Amino acid sequence: MIGLDLSLTCTGVAGEGWTTTIRPRAKLRSHSRLALILDAVVDHIRGADLVVIEGPSFGGGVRHRHEDLAGLRVMVRHACWRRGIPYAVVPPSCRALYATGKGSGSKGAVRDEVRQRYGIECDGPGRYDQADAYVLLAMGLHHLGQPLAVVPDTHRRGLDGCTWPDTEGLAA
Image (cartoon, rainbow, N blue to C red):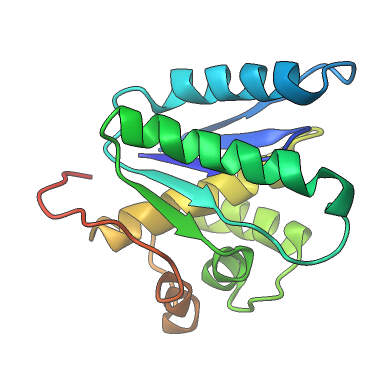
């Protein structure tokens, strides 16, 4: 199981008990940047039973990069499909709700919850991306009936707004 918080500048990646980031050099643009991120993601998803990907945020702040970021999400989903790996798409508000109990929970609150609930320290420039990826991983495991920790009912509602693949027969 892998959680992915896709970004053009700092993609968060998480597996059970670990997180990392994919950070392209600032000078890389367009196809070169997308290729670097995709290749690194493919290295992480090899052998995964399920990949949980954060879906698009329709808020402000990324309009000028919207097309490349949307393309990256499609490329990653296609890479999963080509390898026969089911994937789920989780709206950002569902990720925040699962982590904090509020769909508008801040990046800092999500990071704090990852530290408290799962004992995972997310530090450095990609700390919020790592924390988001870890919550996505936790949601996927919870969806499969293998929660990493006890999650309050108010938080569990975050699972309901996600697009889950048919995972019958998958072992978490």
